[in-house]
Length: 221
Image 1 (cartoon, rainbow, N blue to C red):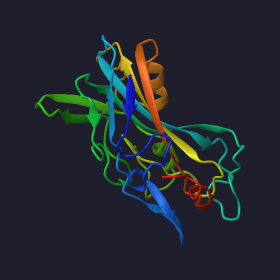
Image 2: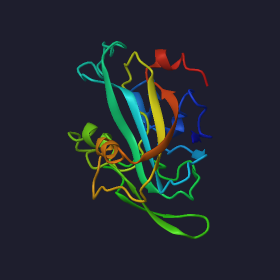
Image 3: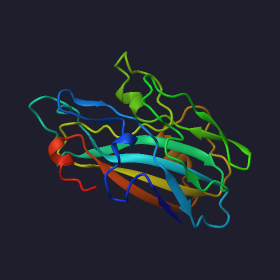
Image 4: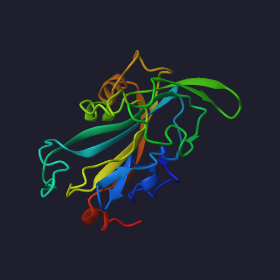
């Protein structure tokens, strides 16, 4: 099984239009277009009943003391943790791609609704996909202008003073069940637990992103 994107080259930078924020010389960051990237896949194994997509960033600082603080940087050597940007489940096997912007086309303060996502395939068949909450739900919890439940895709917004380039991994799982045994609101961590024992195959692609001007300048397009 393989997965790829026409929105970015594997291992290359995530385009700013697919990010939650872009760099700004005056305020460090400003909100961007936040478009979900194009993704496509093939070679799904026989016996697959549904697909699951997870996007996560494994480079998030484990300690936030220096994050976005003037005159300080987040050391590259600081231990890192996962941050989930997107969880999409119950994807029908007949679906082969997701168009850019299909699941997000702007930053939505307080988050997009979920988990149900009505979806119609080109042949007119309707499917009920579901999306989990992403980790902006926790990140913005104490910000009254942004707090809410963030379902679906929200793109990169790494600390603007991080010395490390952040990697955004899109992983597609082929499952032996047609519907995930999750009810209501679910997180990326809960999804990972739910798919254990049901994975027939998996494939991944990745892009990179930085809001640190010195680090971003080193990324090739």
